[in-house]
Length: 53
Image (cartoon, rainbow, N blue to C red; front, side):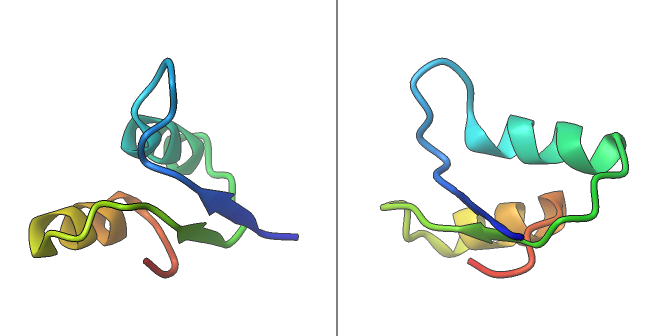
């Protein structure tokens, strides 16, 4: 199993969701798929615990 995560969720930021999962020690692979393309967004996603962006 794996998660495809969009950063632009309607009620919460996807990075916040990912950070919470990692704090809770959820180990599933996470791929961020989003329209955000800035380098800083990619770095933030990987720092938050994504496996790929």
